[in-house]
Length: 151
Image (cartoon, rainbow, N blue to C red; front, side, top):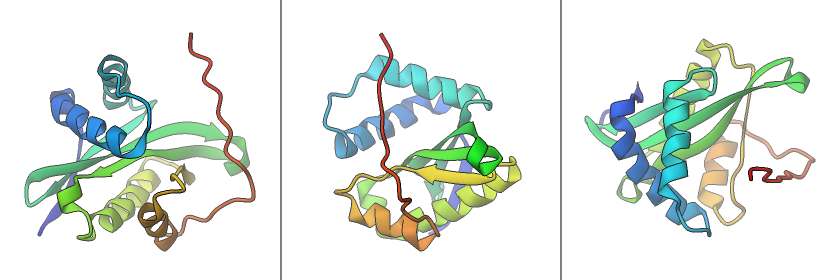
């Protein structure tokens, strides 16, 4: 099994949207809204100031994606990468692809000048939490808070 990562292009949107919907069905409780989701994915794919998307391939077959968004973090004194989504098809999980994806992501972040990384993991996803801890992520003594201000 050969694992590789390639920068996503707009031509990958149909595949990315299928993966994104599968991820959403697994990780979210609200209905998937394809139109706004496609606009958001297209924005990240096409604007490197916003972030990066990579397609994960196993032996040349698309099996998932990594979506990284970027922002400046004063506390880190530089650009912070937010692992917004890491998705691997269910039939490809448990093969070490997630670990390779995280190792790839760390190197890719260093290559573009990212000085720190953060992520969210749902409390009912201990497999993902274990992977993130294995590659050095640690829980902070803070609570994550969120407010949607879109109208």
